[in-house]
Length: 202
Figure (cartoon, rainbow, N blue to C red):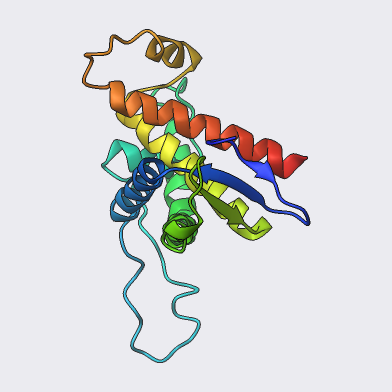
């Protein structure tokens, strides 16, 4: 069925996508890559361990989407900002971020690149009535799952979705609402993600 992931014999997943769907996913993945940014600059010292121990930022990103993709590890929204515990949580989060964010960004970057490359590898000659069939290995399926999750988090952040009640409101938006195309992409990606999860758990 178009737009629904199905299991492949021996593992992995397949989905039929038309040209418009391919273009949308690819465009969103490219935008996500641009938002995440390039990796750290190559070290010229000749030390192969330099990148492994490179320190990342200690402050949360200013962009709300990046804050959603890379949240503080230690935070309690119920904690008063002036409390001593809040200050400790901020210090712990800064330390954790310093040593993990580079790796997290690299993982998200790799997943987005895997999506782009697999879409670019599709041959238009294989397009049938239901569109082109994308076949993913188990490893590629996991990367797609991560990228779909990141894309939904990014769009959800732009739409200011914080809970299920916000999601329910999306279904009632009028067609002339300027957010409608983004909402449709958000819901569609959610369907793809859900069927991919089901496929991988089967």
